[in-house]
Length: 248
Image 1 (tube, rainbow, N blue to C red):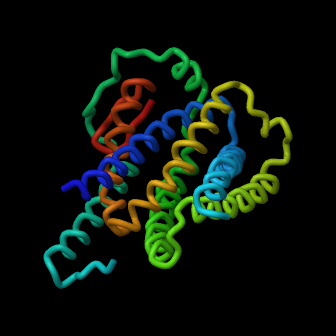
Image 2 (cartoon, rainbow, N blue to C red):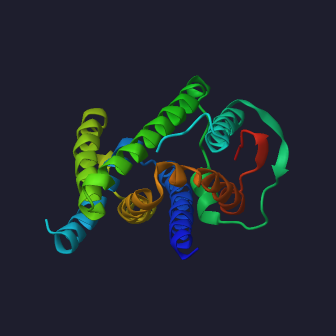
Image 3 (spheres, helix red, strand yellow):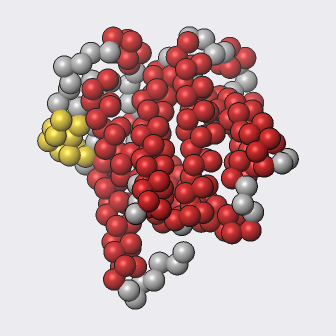
């Protein structure tokens, strides 16, 4: 029981932390932050945070489709993908109305934003591709953990490579130097939060958890992220939750 409790709490912390990043990053994007710039800063700062830990502390599953457990895993995957498609394409009745809690800063940030209908199909496609990549990364983490038991060093190398890649892409896409500014303050807060909680801390915790429980264990906590984000966005961003897509 004790061996299961710590990984469980670890993954709950990771998912709740990532939910907070979704909310804060939304505000940063509303302030004009370019996504490419945000990712580049996030990875660069995360590398700076993890690298010293790696230096001082570490010195420099199969599915089983024929079994009921395996069938349950596949069914859970189908349900999650179906849920994502439902949220993307179907707009049903209101499930949770706007909260009475008002965050004036968030309301001001959201003004003037409009949905680009031309990119309506691009969003779901990118989300699905992101989840496939995330799943592959978890499997790779499990393989790495078998032969290289150094989560801090592994996470630092991952963030370093991500910093180089996102930096090159960011510079290639965003040529305006003003877009790299960290003003207003919400951009600094979003970058610090994403780098510290959702990259540096989360990567180390995920690597530790995957090594002990396997990649599938970590992935089953993903629906928790949806629940926490739905609650926080309704309370803080005045977002209505529908059976399907949600609107501000």
